[in-house]
Length: 216
Ligand SMILES: [Fe+2]
Ligand SMILES: [Fe+2]
Image (cartoon, rainbow, N blue to C red; front, side):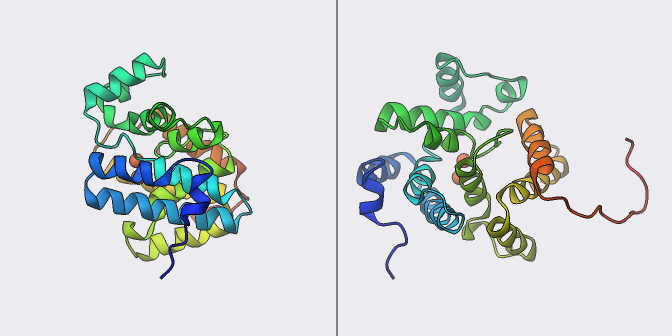
């Protein structure tokens, strides 16, 4: 089967073979397979929504460069670059891997396309007001086929075809519910992303009343 993302398409943004060689040295094989699936799904979503396929695929390929950097390296690179570091980042530096991946993309591979770099940096927590390219990479990271084939995921994949912001909102909700269930810290940026996406998404009918009420 011919891969969706061609070498020719990638060469205009970065040297795909060079990135793949670097990834082979720096991430384990299952993660590399995830990265390739994100690359493909980002390209497919971009094509579907009339966005730049080359940039989407490139951001997908570059999105997890720093995934396996140790916590101290993530923190030191983020500090050196002057990135905003929250208390949640300090407690869970892995959350910085998206922003640090964008730094690596710039430093290691000479990427200067700010939209692509933003899409890499926004792939985990999103960002309020993020553009369609960032939405595509955020969604591809969460919804690539390797994430599973549950009805919920299949539904989210359909929503991603219909409306990017609505899909971002619903993926954020799913992640936030999981974080609560797992007693994990919640990064404030994810809440801001969720609120933004919900507000700009097409209006949806309110959910029917459920038993009990939230304390709000
Ligand atoms: Fe990631
Ligand atoms: Fe990823």
